[in-house]
Length: 237
Image (tube, rainbow, N blue to C red):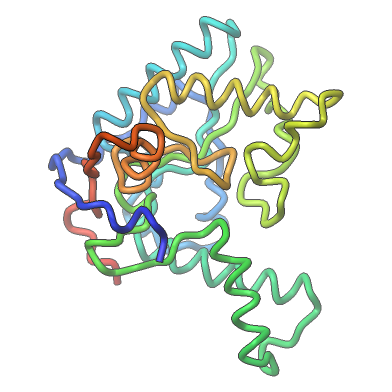
């Protein structure tokens, strides 16, 4: 159980709204759709209204510091069914990368692999009290592109299942630019009201349970409540 799932939810009832993709850079075609993730008629490029407004503000801060740069949106809204698909896909990829036979895995081996998977993937919980962050429409996975449209090197890929995904992995590697790039991304997003996932340099949230929990870590005397639960109409099945 993730610690942020203890945070109560009082949903503001905001609808999902489409992200104006012409204002940002976009990872296209969408990485999970290419794998066959079951989005149905739902586009991943949606966020809650207030979250989208904060993202637009973050890009404004970015362009004040780095004219011509843009936020690249890798992923935003993710139905629970897609979360489940990606969790299972990642499990299978770990098995394949370790040259294991999925049919002969011991229970111990399975548990070790699941522990790796859940370091970066939230449980695809159907419980409305414990929604995966992306299923709330209040989380977004992003990176940066420069004025020439080139993706900024952050030192690891989004969704990489390794220690390099930790935001401060390169903090002591002063000769490399990766930490400075990650800090720039963090700074513009936090200035706009987001919080960064403690284990992923690319994941930011604004109003979900993780956001409220992280805000409480910074301000222990204040009580924070999640503004967004699972999107209305999302069955989780």
